[in-house]
Image 1 (cartoon, rainbow, N blue to C red):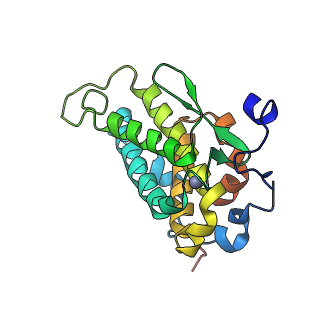
Image 2: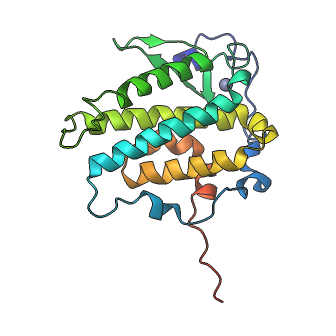
Length: 217
Ligand SMILES: [Zn+2]
C-alpha cells in the first residue's frame, strides 16, 4: 500500500485506474450468461461418507486446473507491458518468496509463481496423498487456504484486467460459472478471508445468488 499511495510516481500502467466504469463484468448482459443454472451450494457441500480432507483436496485440485485453463485462454494478452503489476479492483498483490521477502512482479510473473507453487503442492504425495490410507499432514488445511487465496487473486485479475478479451472469446459464461462455483466453495469451508474476497463482493452477490426455484408445472 505504501508503494501505491506513498512514494510511487506512477501507477502500474501509468494511469489512474477508473473505478466503476471499468467493471464491464457487472453488466447484466454478461452476468446472466452462465453455462449451468442450478444451485451451486448443492455441488459444494460435503457429501455424506466422504472425508473432509479428501473433499477439499479433490475440489482444490479441480479448481486449480480449471483456473489455470481459464487463464491460459487470455495469457497472451497478460504481458509484462499490459499488466505491469498484479492488479484487481485497485488492489495490487505482491508476491512473497519462500523467505517471506516481498517482491514486486508483473501479473504474468505473479500468476506463474502461483501456478508453479500450486502445481508443486497438489502433486506432492505428502501433502495431497492419493494412495489409500495415507494421512493428510497437519498443515493441510492451511495449505488449502493458501492455495485458494492465490487462486482467488488470479480470478479477480481475470475480471479486472481481461474481461474484454474473455468476452471476445465468448468464454465469459465459463468464467462466471467457475467464479461462482469457487466462491460458494470457499465460503462453505471458510477457506478465504472475507477481507480478501470483499473487493469482488459486488460480482459475487450477483453470481452466487441461489437459482430461483423451478416454476411449478
Ligand atoms: Zn493481466
